[in-house]
Length: 462
Ligand code: ACO
Ligand code: ZN
Image (cartoon, rainbow, N blue to C red; front, side, top):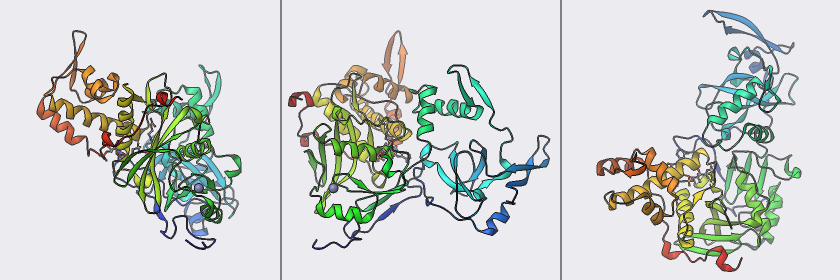
């Protein structure tokens, strides 16, 4: 490369692709609001009716179907429930999670909002003019007693916890730890990262060390995953860093795809960096600083510049609960291309080599659940089709390394199983199987088990 200039892009002249907006159809996954201080101009202030008494007068719906004039103090309180105009142009109910003052004037605030209907990854900073002040809910947050915990909570906080609790992915959290989690992680700290040739909008809070709390963008070395605050620092690092692939052993290669196994004990810093990075896209996962106990399986796309990380999963060296996967992530630029299903399939191939059945660690995220359901459905129905239904749950589990409970819930969801006289009976009508298979989506990238060169952890004398 000769002499790299100070500002050379991390992607070595490849340029940076922005991954923003709604990437795919069904589940919106990324923010596209540019972070940083937005400045409201005078006309917007006038439109939203802000006056110098720090309150605004609006017409709001009264109970009798008529409208009445109400006064709303500004800035809005944290906890306020109101409608907010989202990027689809429509109004959606939100709750104000946090607010911050802008430099431009005494009345200028931005509000960090959570959309009730959407996953927390879409929480974002909005300006006052995106909020429909007529819709501010009249009942202020009153303190109510939480009998179970004896803790003071506002009614809204309580409602929030109950609402969230009912959602998929939170069933393993009790109210107190969920509250603690949500309080600590309520506002995203890092809003963008640069990794290889991509600039990526982040989804969630990640507990980076305090010295990184003042920057909204971080620059990662795509090979050793160390991170810095400035592009010039990364350029300097890239000149020194001699890694061109993840540390550890390459245990699988198929065309330009490679899998590397990284032992968290042998590569502690790499393991920790990976956890910081991954947490930006994983919500309800505890960050394990104790990376010694884990193996990391890194999926890469390789070319003449090196092996570029696409995604990964982690696995405990010894899992008492029978988990064969702790966390799974496909980096946003690579999502919906079948890599998630590849990683899931890979985790079951490792279990087969271990002679065990496995299951992913709970709770599963919304996207995690969709991916697993899709994978389980496709694998199980393919077998049922081949055996014309003449196969037991135990046999299905043995053939696939999918834990029997997951086999049962998958078939139950598809209504292919009945519980008769204390036994589960599979009913596999070929037409029904075909219909479910079509609905289960694409198969994803297949794992060629013959290309896996691997011995289970315990056999390496660890
Ligand atoms: N909207 C709707 N369905 C989706 C979406 C989406 N945005 N993303 C994935 N799916 C579903 C689809 O059914 C898809 O199959 P299809 O494309 O054939 O329809 C299926 O999931 C899997 O698609 P893949 O392309 O194989 O998976 P991907 O590479 O996108 O990775 C993953 C899936 C790993 C869950 C990814 O979404 C991700 O990294 N999410 C953030 C981290 C996360 O939530 N991880 C799981 C946490 S739980 C745990 O770690 C145990
Ligand atoms: Zn590096």
